[in-house]
Amino acid sequence: MELAYYPGCSLKQTSALFDRQTKEVFSHLGFQLQEIEDWSCCGATSAGKIDYFLETAMPARNIGLAEAAGFSEMVIPCSACYSKTLLAQIRCQQDQKLKERINSELKHKISGSLKISSILEPLLRICQGQDFKDKIQRPLTAIKALCYYGCMLTRFPMDIDLEDNAENPSFMEIILNSLGALTKDWSHKTACCGASSAVYEPDLASLLMSRIMREAVARDVNCLVTTCPVCQMNLDVYQDRFCQQTGNQKRLPVYFLTELLGFALGIDIKTLQIDRHFTQATKLLEELELQQREAQT
Image: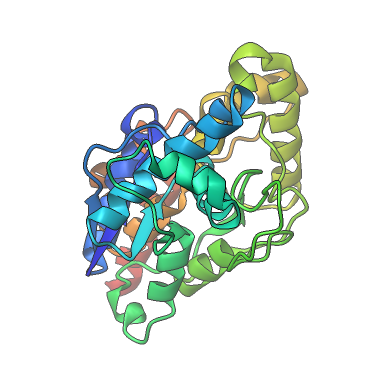
Protein backbone atom coordinates (compact mmCIF):
# COMPACT_ATOMS: atom_id res chain seq x y z
CA MET A 1 0.00 0.00 0.00
CA GLU A 2 1.27 3.46 -0.91
CA LEU A 3 0.94 6.55 1.25
CA ALA A 4 2.02 10.06 0.34
CA TYR A 5 4.94 11.16 2.45
CA TYR A 6 5.97 14.67 3.41
CA PRO A 7 9.28 14.63 5.32
CA GLY A 8 9.69 18.37 5.76
CA CYS A 9 12.96 20.26 6.18
CA SER A 10 14.05 18.85 9.56
CA LEU A 11 14.00 15.26 8.33
CA LYS A 12 16.33 16.20 5.49
CA GLN A 13 18.79 17.99 7.78
CA THR A 14 19.19 17.71 11.57
CA SER A 15 16.86 14.69 11.87
CA ALA A 16 17.84 12.76 8.75
CA LEU A 17 17.96 9.57 10.84
CA PHE A 18 14.23 10.00 11.59
CA ASP A 19 13.53 10.07 7.83
CA ARG A 20 15.51 6.87 7.32
CA GLN A 21 13.88 5.11 10.27
CA THR A 22 10.39 6.08 9.16
CA LYS A 23 10.91 4.64 5.69
CA GLU A 24 12.51 1.46 7.09
CA VAL A 25 9.72 0.86 9.59
CA PHE A 26 6.88 1.41 7.15
CA SER A 27 8.61 -0.81 4.60
CA HIS A 28 8.89 -3.62 7.17
CA LEU A 29 5.20 -3.21 7.89
CA GLY A 30 4.26 -3.54 4.21
CA PHE A 31 3.66 0.13 3.43
CA GLN A 32 5.51 2.23 0.87
CA LEU A 33 5.95 5.89 1.67
CA GLN A 34 6.02 7.85 -1.56
CA GLU A 35 7.71 11.21 -1.07
CA ILE A 36 5.66 13.82 -2.93
CA GLU A 37 7.57 15.33 -5.83
CA ASP A 38 8.81 18.91 -5.69
CA TRP A 39 7.62 19.47 -2.11
CA SER A 40 8.59 22.72 -0.43
CA CYS A 41 8.96 24.04 3.10
CA CYS A 42 5.64 24.32 4.95
CA GLY A 43 6.76 27.48 6.75
CA ALA A 44 6.78 25.68 10.10
CA THR A 45 6.46 28.20 12.93
CA SER A 46 8.27 31.02 11.08
CA ALA A 47 5.85 31.90 8.28
CA GLY A 48 2.99 32.62 10.66
CA LYS A 49 5.05 35.30 12.37
CA ILE A 50 5.37 37.16 9.07
CA ASP A 51 2.19 36.70 7.07
CA TYR A 52 -1.11 34.85 7.63
CA PHE A 53 -1.60 34.17 3.92
CA LEU A 54 1.92 32.79 3.55
CA GLU A 55 1.40 30.56 6.59
CA THR A 56 -1.55 28.92 4.82
CA ALA A 57 -0.35 29.00 1.22
CA MET A 58 3.00 27.28 1.80
CA PRO A 59 1.62 24.00 3.23
CA ALA A 60 -1.41 24.23 0.89
CA ARG A 61 0.95 23.87 -2.07
CA ASN A 62 2.13 20.49 -0.75
CA ILE A 63 -1.45 19.37 -0.24
CA GLY A 64 -2.16 20.18 -3.89
CA LEU A 65 0.86 18.16 -5.01
CA ALA A 66 -0.26 15.10 -3.06
CA GLU A 67 -3.87 15.36 -4.28
CA ALA A 68 -2.74 15.79 -7.88
CA ALA A 69 -0.66 12.61 -7.56
CA GLY A 70 -3.82 10.71 -6.61
CA PHE A 71 -3.10 10.01 -2.95
CA SER A 72 -5.88 9.78 -0.39
CA GLU A 73 -3.63 10.07 2.70
CA MET A 74 -0.38 11.90 3.43
CA VAL A 75 1.85 10.97 6.39
CA ILE A 76 3.81 13.79 8.06
CA PRO A 77 6.26 12.73 10.82
CA CYS A 78 7.27 16.24 11.92
CA SER A 79 4.89 17.71 14.50
CA ALA A 80 5.24 21.30 13.24
CA CYS A 81 4.79 20.30 9.58
CA TYR A 82 1.76 18.18 10.46
CA SER A 83 0.22 20.95 12.53
CA LYS A 84 0.71 23.65 9.89
CA THR A 85 -0.46 21.46 7.02
CA LEU A 86 -3.62 20.28 8.77
CA LEU A 87 -4.34 23.85 9.86
CA ALA A 88 -3.95 25.11 6.28
CA GLN A 89 -6.38 22.49 4.99
CA ILE A 90 -9.01 23.40 7.58
CA ARG A 91 -8.63 27.13 6.97
CA CYS A 92 -9.20 26.58 3.26
CA GLN A 93 -12.27 24.48 4.00
CA GLN A 94 -13.70 27.20 6.21
CA ASP A 95 -12.72 30.22 4.10
CA GLN A 96 -13.70 29.83 0.45
CA LYS A 97 -12.19 33.18 -0.57
CA LEU A 98 -8.85 32.22 0.96
CA LYS A 99 -8.95 28.88 -0.84
CA GLU A 100 -9.73 30.56 -4.18
CA ARG A 101 -6.91 33.07 -3.70
CA ILE A 102 -4.42 30.30 -2.94
CA ASN A 103 -5.63 28.12 -5.82
CA SER A 104 -5.30 31.03 -8.24
CA GLU A 105 -1.54 30.90 -7.67
CA LEU A 106 -1.13 27.11 -7.71
CA LYS A 107 -0.55 24.78 -10.64
CA HIS A 108 -2.01 21.91 -8.61
CA LYS A 109 -5.18 23.13 -6.90
CA ILE A 110 -6.27 21.91 -3.49
CA SER A 111 -9.67 20.27 -3.14
CA GLY A 112 -9.69 19.12 0.48
CA SER A 113 -9.97 15.40 -0.30
CA LEU A 114 -6.62 14.44 1.27
CA LYS A 115 -6.40 12.89 4.74
CA ILE A 116 -3.49 14.50 6.56
CA SER A 117 -2.04 12.19 9.20
CA SER A 118 0.67 12.43 11.79
CA ILE A 119 2.99 9.44 11.89
CA LEU A 120 1.01 8.08 14.85
CA GLU A 121 -2.31 7.61 13.08
CA PRO A 122 -1.26 5.00 10.47
CA LEU A 123 1.11 3.32 12.94
CA LEU A 124 -1.71 2.92 15.44
CA ARG A 125 -3.93 1.31 12.80
CA ILE A 126 -1.13 -1.08 11.88
CA CYS A 127 -0.27 -1.97 15.49
CA GLN A 128 -3.90 -2.77 16.21
CA GLY A 129 -4.07 -5.14 13.24
CA GLN A 130 -4.57 -8.86 13.77
CA ASP A 131 -1.20 -9.97 12.36
CA PHE A 132 0.97 -7.25 13.92
CA LYS A 133 2.15 -9.35 16.89
CA ASP A 134 3.62 -11.88 14.46
CA LYS A 135 5.96 -9.17 13.15
CA ILE A 136 7.53 -8.45 16.55
CA GLN A 137 10.93 -10.14 16.82
CA ARG A 138 12.25 -8.37 19.92
CA PRO A 139 9.58 -7.47 22.50
CA LEU A 140 10.46 -4.32 24.43
CA THR A 141 9.95 -5.95 27.81
CA ALA A 142 12.74 -4.01 29.56
CA ILE A 143 11.62 -0.60 28.30
CA LYS A 144 10.05 1.76 30.82
CA ALA A 145 9.12 4.83 28.84
CA LEU A 146 7.54 8.24 29.09
CA CYS A 147 5.91 9.43 25.88
CA TYR A 148 6.67 13.05 25.10
CA TYR A 149 4.33 14.60 22.52
CA GLY A 150 5.57 18.17 22.79
CA CYS A 151 3.45 21.26 22.27
CA MET A 152 2.83 21.17 18.50
CA LEU A 153 1.23 17.79 17.85
CA THR A 154 -2.13 18.37 19.52
CA ARG A 155 -2.29 22.13 20.13
CA PHE A 156 -4.02 24.29 17.52
CA PRO A 157 -5.35 27.89 17.49
CA MET A 158 -8.85 26.57 16.80
CA ASP A 159 -10.99 23.56 17.71
CA ILE A 160 -9.99 20.61 15.53
CA ASP A 161 -11.51 17.15 15.65
CA LEU A 162 -8.36 15.08 16.24
CA GLU A 163 -8.25 11.29 16.39
CA ASP A 164 -6.22 11.43 19.61
CA ASN A 165 -7.12 13.30 22.78
CA ALA A 166 -5.70 16.83 22.53
CA GLU A 167 -5.35 17.26 26.30
CA ASN A 168 -4.08 13.80 27.15
CA PRO A 169 -2.85 12.03 23.99
CA SER A 170 -2.27 8.30 24.21
CA PHE A 171 -1.48 6.93 20.73
CA MET A 172 2.23 6.56 21.49
CA GLU A 173 1.52 4.69 24.70
CA ILE A 174 -0.82 2.29 22.89
CA ILE A 175 1.78 1.58 20.22
CA LEU A 176 4.60 1.02 22.74
CA ASN A 177 2.38 -1.19 24.92
CA SER A 178 1.68 -3.35 21.85
CA LEU A 179 5.47 -3.86 21.60
CA GLY A 180 5.70 -5.06 25.20
CA ALA A 181 7.01 -1.80 26.70
CA LEU A 182 5.79 -0.32 29.96
CA THR A 183 4.65 3.30 29.74
CA LYS A 184 3.86 5.68 32.56
CA ASP A 185 1.58 8.70 32.62
CA TRP A 186 2.97 12.11 33.53
CA SER A 187 2.07 15.78 33.59
CA HIS A 188 4.66 17.02 31.06
CA LYS A 189 3.75 14.96 28.00
CA THR A 190 2.59 18.07 26.08
CA ALA A 191 4.90 20.64 27.74
CA CYS A 192 7.06 22.88 25.55
CA CYS A 193 10.78 22.10 25.31
CA GLY A 194 11.64 25.58 24.09
CA ALA A 195 11.80 24.61 20.41
CA SER A 196 13.99 27.06 18.43
CA SER A 197 14.53 29.27 21.48
CA ALA A 198 17.34 26.82 22.34
CA VAL A 199 19.34 28.87 19.81
CA TYR A 200 18.39 32.47 20.64
CA GLU A 201 17.24 32.13 24.29
CA PRO A 202 19.27 29.18 25.58
CA ASP A 203 18.72 29.94 29.28
CA LEU A 204 14.94 29.91 28.89
CA ALA A 205 15.03 26.75 26.79
CA SER A 206 17.34 25.04 29.29
CA LEU A 207 14.88 25.84 32.07
CA LEU A 208 11.99 24.31 30.13
CA MET A 209 14.00 21.22 29.20
CA SER A 210 15.27 20.74 32.74
CA ARG A 211 11.70 20.73 34.05
CA ILE A 212 10.77 18.00 31.58
CA MET A 213 13.81 15.92 32.54
CA ARG A 214 13.23 16.43 36.27
CA GLU A 215 9.69 15.10 35.94
CA ALA A 216 10.90 12.18 33.83
CA VAL A 217 13.63 11.12 36.25
CA ALA A 218 11.18 11.29 39.16
CA ARG A 219 9.04 8.61 37.51
CA ASP A 220 11.79 5.97 37.41
CA VAL A 221 11.86 5.32 33.67
CA ASN A 222 14.78 4.44 31.41
CA CYS A 223 13.91 6.50 28.33
CA LEU A 224 11.83 9.24 26.74
CA VAL A 225 10.05 8.65 23.43
CA THR A 226 8.89 11.29 20.96
CA THR A 227 7.96 11.87 17.32
CA CYS A 228 8.89 15.56 17.13
CA PRO A 229 12.32 16.18 15.52
CA VAL A 230 12.86 19.47 17.38
CA CYS A 231 11.86 17.98 20.74
CA GLN A 232 14.15 15.01 20.20
CA MET A 233 17.06 17.20 19.14
CA ASN A 234 16.69 19.59 22.08
CA LEU A 235 16.40 16.92 24.76
CA ASP A 236 19.19 14.85 23.23
CA VAL A 237 21.73 17.45 22.08
CA TYR A 238 21.41 19.81 25.05
CA GLN A 239 20.85 17.21 27.77
CA ASP A 240 24.34 17.45 29.25
CA ARG A 241 24.12 21.24 29.38
CA PHE A 242 20.76 21.60 31.10
CA CYS A 243 21.39 18.65 33.44
CA GLN A 244 24.68 20.16 34.58
CA GLN A 245 23.00 23.52 35.13
CA THR A 246 20.37 21.94 37.37
CA GLY A 247 22.60 19.40 39.11
CA ASN A 248 20.83 16.38 37.62
CA GLN A 249 23.23 13.42 37.46
CA LYS A 250 20.98 11.05 35.54
CA ARG A 251 20.80 10.93 31.75
CA LEU A 252 18.02 9.37 29.67
CA PRO A 253 18.08 8.35 26.01
CA VAL A 254 15.51 10.23 23.95
CA TYR A 255 14.24 7.89 21.25
CA PHE A 256 12.14 8.51 18.21
CA LEU A 257 9.17 6.13 18.31
CA THR A 258 10.43 4.71 15.01
CA GLU A 259 13.66 3.62 16.70
CA LEU A 260 11.94 1.45 19.29
CA LEU A 261 9.39 0.19 16.80
CA GLY A 262 12.11 -0.63 14.28
CA PHE A 263 14.20 -2.39 16.92
CA ALA A 264 11.17 -4.47 17.96
CA LEU A 265 10.60 -5.42 14.32
CA GLY A 266 14.15 -6.78 14.14
CA ILE A 267 15.90 -3.92 12.33
CA ASP A 268 19.47 -3.56 13.59
CA ILE A 269 20.70 -0.58 15.58
CA LYS A 270 23.12 0.71 12.94
CA THR A 271 20.52 0.59 10.17
CA LEU A 272 18.25 2.66 12.39
CA GLN A 273 21.25 4.94 13.17
CA ILE A 274 20.51 4.94 16.91
CA ASP A 275 24.26 5.19 17.46
CA ARG A 276 24.12 8.77 16.15
CA HIS A 277 22.51 10.17 19.31
CA PHE A 278 24.39 12.70 21.44
CA THR A 279 23.11 11.11 24.67
CA GLN A 280 23.95 7.38 24.91
CA ALA A 281 21.04 5.47 23.37
CA THR A 282 22.36 2.09 22.21
CA LYS A 283 23.33 0.58 25.58
CA LEU A 284 19.76 0.02 26.78
CA LEU A 285 18.76 -1.74 23.56
CA GLU A 286 21.96 -3.80 23.41
CA GLU A 287 21.31 -5.01 26.96
CA LEU A 288 17.74 -5.90 26.06
CA GLU A 289 18.91 -7.83 23.00
CA LEU A 290 21.52 -9.70 25.09
CA GLN A 291 18.90 -10.64 27.71
CA GLN A 292 16.62 -12.04 25.03
CA ARG A 293 19.42 -14.05 23.44
CA GLU A 294 20.37 -15.54 26.82
CA ALA A 295 16.74 -16.42 27.52
CA GLN A 296 16.58 -18.33 24.21
CA THR A 297 19.68 -20.44 24.97
